[in-house]
Length: 128
View 1 (cartoon, one colour):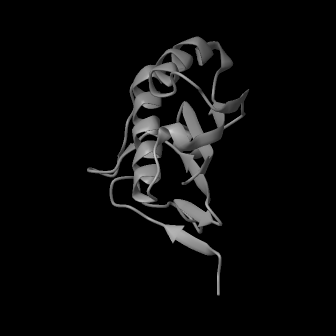
View 2 (view 1 turned 120 degrees about the vertical axis):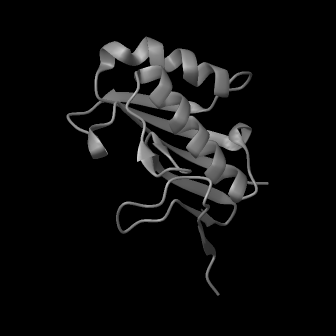
């Protein structure tokens, strides 16, 4: 009997490669990196870092909810930025979604992200 369940929802963008939106294993949810694609249109959001971060976090939240969780269940997040100079603007939006007791987090600038987006965020959550 497998202790792993693949999580998939129409409320978040479809996968663009051989991976799952998330995997639930023994109460731990591992959410793949989310980028700013609108799941309703499947179109890339090309706005500024704030707009892109907002969409990324909505997508992350949709995957969490589909697994029976919520943002407050996130224990670790990783933020990948195209330009670290946009950290403060990304952080303003991030703080609205993770207020109170925010998860542990790493943030880094990377050379390139899928579809040349400005931000990607993945997460690990403990689902009750």
